[in-house]
Length: 129
Image (cartoon, rainbow, N blue to C red; front, side, top):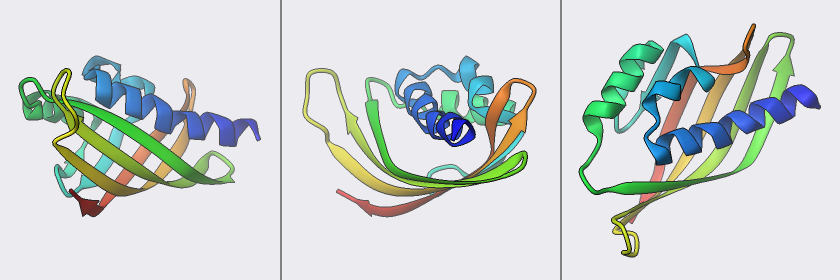
């Protein structure tokens, strides 16, 4: 159960990293050779490339709040698969959200000397308002 809890925690740490725009903390969530696939980013390989892309993709004065739930984890030794649903609210300070997205996340986590990290992440857009 401890492995499952730590992997589930990765989703929360990812949400906070994205919402707080803490790109220098990507090492707390991703392996150095992570592969990320998403409708927004296309395909990005490597933690440094991902952090650089996210810095460059920031929209001035736009904030996000990621809410992830329904996490399912299947551990097999030092590898695990995990999936979850996520809703992302895009907003400006002191304003209601101007865009909302529903996502399905599918990830692979790898046990590293520093703990579990995401080594692959696939995001599928389910809906957008």
